[in-house]
Length: 462
Image (cartoon, rainbow, N blue to C red; front, side, top):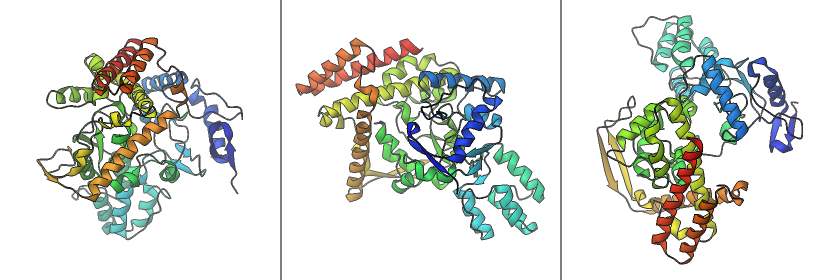
């Protein structure tokens, strides 16, 4: 029986094969000079927060690897270099110890369904790669035509079994899947030492309790909107996202919600793998789109507008865009800490004014949707009132305040996290106004506080 070990200072159960994997990776000359340390149990501290000082050391190493391997510094670059330099291309799952390829070689849900339809075969997820599957199921020319249909290979292209494999490798595996295939582990640089989530795809659906797969599809909603207190017509945006999902395409927020941008009905179509690799990092082109869009609509939530306005016109390169992404994420972290303090002191009613529950009373249909561009020709709205709408509102509010409750337990929130006496004094002034039930001046004071935090971040980091 494979041994499973509980590592106290890592606070999770690690499979022995994963422990062996960590030792093999840190000993590889490929990762020479990539920072790591060991815990009290002598095991490798595999995870480091990317925004910590040690996390910044790791990020610099990954940037250097991109430069060394001639990979452009842009969203998704760490995923590309992590795959390129990995010594075995096999990642070991922390939970079950299974080894899976980090290449995009496993059929995703859409492709698995297509294979079942064409060949009447049931495929256990992540049990075999696409090349093994093709070798088993393709027996003749008729089967080759079926594979062409599954992978959208042009009908008039003459192709043999070996050529099919080469076609899939060149167009889908090496091209990061294009919506048909998935890797055995998702990218997570620089937080994880090897650049990949510790849990393999075999177990990630069980270990990841966040906005993942079934729980998002069940509600047709993106709970990150509520968790990050985002502005925007979330109902209309959620409905548009569902059109992307129906076409097997991932909807990429041009301005990520987790950086403080609005949840608005405009997305770039990406594969799920591409969207995961991009994560919450913006590129120069993203910033340029946002600058153009904000001439006619709101693109950033009110609480994050000041950091955006301070720095948006200073972004000249993809590296600048990544830098802005980091600062906006940190700014939103501060915003949610302030909100959690307000909630903890009993002023929840004041905070509810910053939520947008009324969007729940509308539903939308989109005509002429094009999954290649993410655009549509017409949107039709319909007002709805009923129990489902009330349930959505209650769910919205519950998730938003649950997130603030999580922030109450953040250890460094209990000290002077800002390390700035002026900001701390302004925070106390805010609480004084709330105690006086002066919500008008309290909102002005809150805006002023967020402006000071944004200025502090910009001064220290730009």
